[in-house]
Amino acid sequence: MARRRQLYEGKAKILFEGPEPGTLVQYFKDDATAFNAQKKGTITGKGVLNNRISEFLMTKLAEINIPTHFIRRLNMREQLIKEVEIIPVEVVVRNVAAGSLSSRLGIPEGTRLPRSIIEYYYKNDQLNDPMVAEEHITAFGWATPPDMDDIVHLTLRINDFLTGLFLGVGITLVDFKVEFGRLYENEDMRIVLADEISPDNCRLWDAKTNEKMDKDRFRRDLGKIEEAYQEVARRLGILPEAGSRDLKGPEMMQ
Image 1 (cartoon, rainbow, N blue to C red):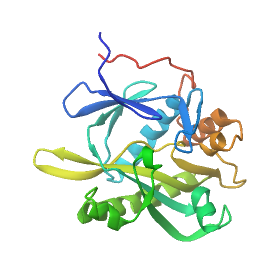
Image 2: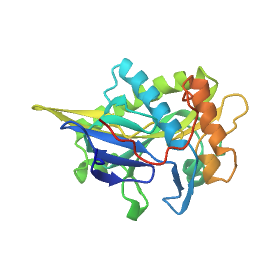
Image 3: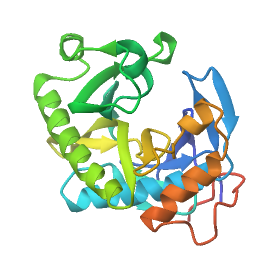
Image 4: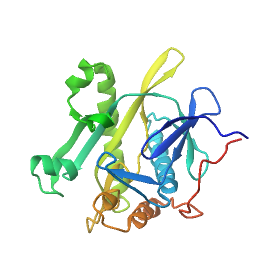
């Protein structure tokens, strides 16, 4: 059977034409990037693990009525998703000071924040994804005020749920990035969670030792990157049956 038509390739995923109208196939790569792709590498088996972790978290969120683009996992590296119109804004939730927040504001890394903070970044690699305010988002038409109300409401619910879920397996959810899209069904439109949730876009620390269990191990050359991703999957109870063996390319769908 001929390979499905590729529609888009990003830093960590490839999108292919789906088997039915309104669907896409999302393929998880092992490629790793940091600092807006200034640093590049490969984390063997990352795509397999992220596929399973994101499937697990999206499914759990759907169980508490968070609408997502996820339909089902197809194989070790691919999942079937609903086609959505991506809102060009990255939504970052911070629970503990780390990364750019610490460097921008001089807050020691690891400081528990007085409350969760939501930040917005304009999705534009050429501009290095600059931080923006809600006023920019609505003024430039990237999202409407009602869209933003939905996004904030969903983001806070996602944060509350994931914080508890990870804490239950001994992991602190330090911060994370999510993206949203518009899903059009008949005459209706609703905002849904899109992209992925995995150690690629979450900061996850061991709750007792504060050991990093996410892509910061790649960013900061800490080593044992594959082991950290595997440990997250193991604690969630979803380490792939076949292990994180490397699959060479997209598997064909019937």
